[in-house]
Image (spheres, rainbow, N blue to C red):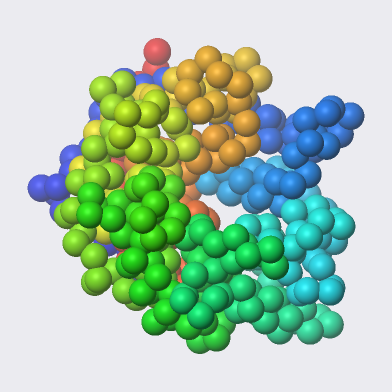
Amino acid sequence: MALSPSAMQQTAHTEDEHGLLVDLHVAFIQALDRKRDSLAYHLTTHLRTNGVYWGLVALEIMGRPDALDAQALIDYVLSCWDQRTGGFGSHPGHDPHILSTLSAIQILAIKDALPLLEQDGKRKRLIQFIVGLQLPDGSVQGDKWGETDTRFLYCAVSALAHLGALGRFNRTAAINHILRCHNYDGGFGLCQGAESHSGQVFVCIAALSILDALHHIDRDKVGWWLSERQLPNGGLNGRPQKLEDVCYSWWVLSALSMIGRLHWIDAGKLSRFILSAQDPDDGGIADRPDNVTDVFHTNFGVAGLSLLGFPGLEPVDPTYCMPAKVIRKLGIEKEYQLPAPRAAPQPQ
């Protein structure tokens, strides 16, 4: 269940801010699939299922769930299923991977289409595919080629939670592997001994949350490392001495929410940074102001604003990066800290 912050921890933010360009962002996402003649469209097929998920979540958070054709989305996702292995690829004919498999499951969950996996034994084979990626040491491969990463472990845990099949996973081995990737500075790496990184902190904290194992970590120590990611301009970076990037608005805030330290970030400054990275002409959000926009940063910028309690946005679940209402319906919600209420932006 979500936990509200105490009045002593947070207060409403009333700083003047530029508005979120919802209509432009919706149009930006809708136009992505119409650019099939561009080279970029064909060079990004390895991210297509992920891209659909990013765009769909952003639309849900902005309150525009019907901006994309639901049946077309469902049909596309099912066309990416690999009947040989039971997993989902990023595009029809592509090899299955845990990253695209999770995105496919999340898209179906958002569109209330998970029951379709019961047809032809897809759900059973899908669970077997995911469980089969876990190695004896608790780590998880992304695919049959053997690369392991804490991202892949999180994807497996999240996917199995969506499918109601966590009981098939070796929880103890997974938890122990994550804890071996926990560094002395409070962060987490992609494997044991790897450098701490905000993205890896999110996947490790979220996996521990889903596995009911957050009691193994020092929340203050992790929260300190995460809060140090905020730079003077309000943006967050992924690790020390790096530039700010809008996507870390999600990776950092979501982890802070799950450990109850969301109030350790200056919400007003971060909101202004995210909004400054919008394209006021064509829509979309970039990694930082004046850079090229993309659906990845658009989603995580909007999701970050939702975690900050930005007015007019639908709640997002920080554990799964999914609409909170979808996660509640699935009955897999974990404890997290809600944002403080925000005042509506003042007109410019």
